[in-house]
Length: 219
Image (cartoon, rainbow, N blue to C red; front, side):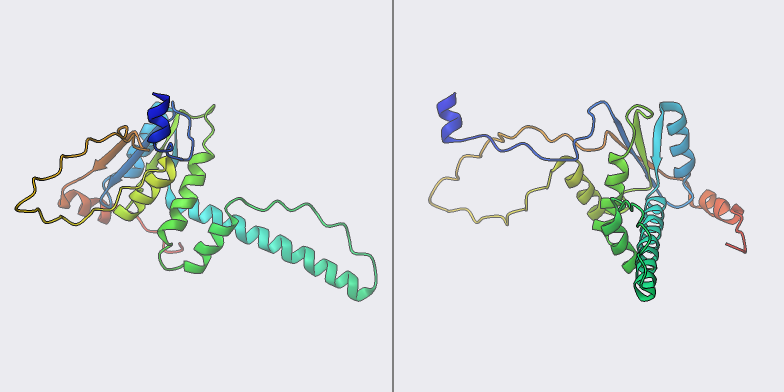
């Protein structure tokens, strides 16, 4: 066995986010007004899950980045004023750089247009990694991922899995016999999410919910 593994070593294990194995990972998808947020909150209350809403994750990261930039600007302004007055600058406070600063700045550059997939996936994954395993038994994603590209990017970050490229079909020889089919030696892939639930409602119900949604003229 050692000789075989030396000649043909097994593929390296996939590198993912390293989430706890007992963490429950759920995604709720569906059309607008299908009730995703309501059902996500019910799941959270019943199974002690943390609800992760991508829009809120982006807003929180952008807010933290703006606050950090304002604090840095205030420190630099105080130092410049002290230097101009020829006095010793006041002691600078200890500023903690937000872990989402780089992604948040990329989101700020894209807004108010759509945030790039790699940015929103990165922010969502950081929110997933920040879920407290003591307080919560898992998380539920509210309306995420929205596209196939987001789903593939999320899967790659969570598990390290990336689907192999599809080779074009080869033309068979009319003389030589076809080569024997290679048996799959890799272990089956374990998805990064435990369950993906798609909610759907009839068009008429979605229309009634949309019309019944109250809008605040101030916001």
